[in-house]
Image: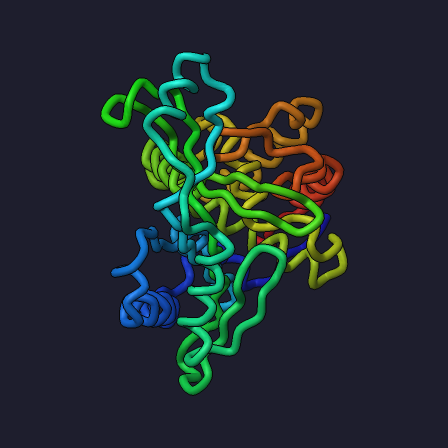
Amino acid sequence: MITLPEECRTWSNPGGWGRQRWSVNSVKDCLDGAGLRDRHQFDFYVQGSFANNTHTGPESDIDVVVALQECWASNIGALPKKDRDQYDEVTERAEYDLAQFKNDVDDVLRPEYFRRWGDKCLKLKEYNDPFLLPIDVLVCVEYRHYKFFHDLSDQDYIPGVCFVIPNAGMVVNFPKLHLLRGNVKDRRVGGNYKPVIRIAKNAYRWAVEQNLLPAGSAAGYFIECLLFNVPDEHFSSNHWLSFRACFERLRYETAALSGFECQHGMGNLFGDGPEQWRKESAVGLVDCMVEMRCRW
């Protein structure tokens, strides 16, 4: 039996938002103040744990999306020929692309931030204001998962984002749909879904500190998607009982993990893709969580 620390009683509580909101607005104001929005159409929003209210404290990552909308990637090739032909007839190749947009965003932010490009994001740290927190900025293009395309005035698609990771290729994700479906599930179970996610994230971090699990084996996004697949009846107002019930259910259903979806519902949680999880890591997490017991 693993005995948890006393502070685990607060693990279901959300972290603060003050410095995080200030930090996000600082980036937005910088982009808007430079007139970039006057020249180009793009979307700016927070994704990840802060957007989903599953952050666990000030050490949680702040993730911002800056998505170019005047060009996009899509699944148009998967649609019937008449849809593809109509799409080709009424759309044209964009003159401004993601590479140019990334350069422009970088140029705007350079005077205000220490910057470093990672594989996915532009990592920012403010020069002169210690109150502002580091932020990861995903500079990307809009992705359109078309259901049909009959004309510009008669089309339907699910919006997402698209970006490229070196040596891994194009990555598609759906952060707004992820947020929407998580909020719907949380409301459906009386607001008892997200507290369990926060407990699980804190428990994972503590397990890593105790050398019970390897660092980097369970990103917060993966933990959230894993718990999304647990049936609603396992979430109750007693968050610790819910935590135990969820992971006991997951251990019982280990063989079914391969069929789990991401929270956005647009792809599989497990696989070899850059935005997918290794099943072996999930099984290790589930086993460790089941062994955890509180002192009381």
